[in-house]
Image (cartoon, rainbow, N blue to C red):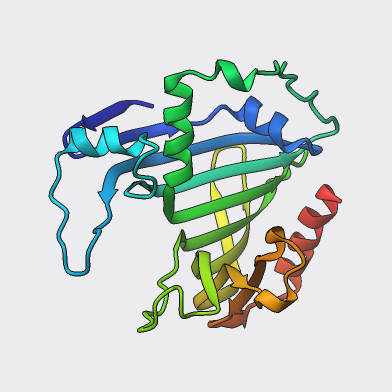
Length: 278
């Protein structure tokens, strides 16, 4: 990265002009491809210790130090949650085929005795248990290259996503209490995707680019995952472990309008790129 902006009081960390390690990314993929470029113009991380009201209509107003201490306290579980919001302004990843797969990075693990867990380790467990993460990515581009021998220009296909977000989905407000309802929503996450464009083009050794859009998904789609905990009837419970039944469902809402713009030249270029990876 080239620049760092930090505001401890507001819990904001900003990194600018970030270049990711292409070797590590290539190794993590474990595929016959090579990451030739991975950059992020701006990465912003926002941290917030959210205190939850104990009574209806109450506005929490405790100090930051108290919230940080209470987060790791076992006497008041769930009173404080760590909210992490990651904002990414632009991601560019360039990939090309490779004839070899890099060796995986080995990591040694050591068994830890639970009795030796210290205060810091317990605090970090409480932080992770309360974590509420949301990610927003603007202008994500993945470009797949098919290098050719000179003087033939390199073929490439570009996939651009205008907006991609991962966040907590809003839950409908119910007038009945948790005890009155037969189920409780444990988690509800959503992934929103807005406007996807696919282009095919060439790049010469001098860096000259030519491109043609071949597909456009205009609109917004959502993928939602919900995990619910049901209370089994007491008469049917064989043991206490069956008192709560967990079920998950997935909802997919497609709101994109698909447009295809293909001619013979772009279709041949697209075919060459696909064959180079398979």
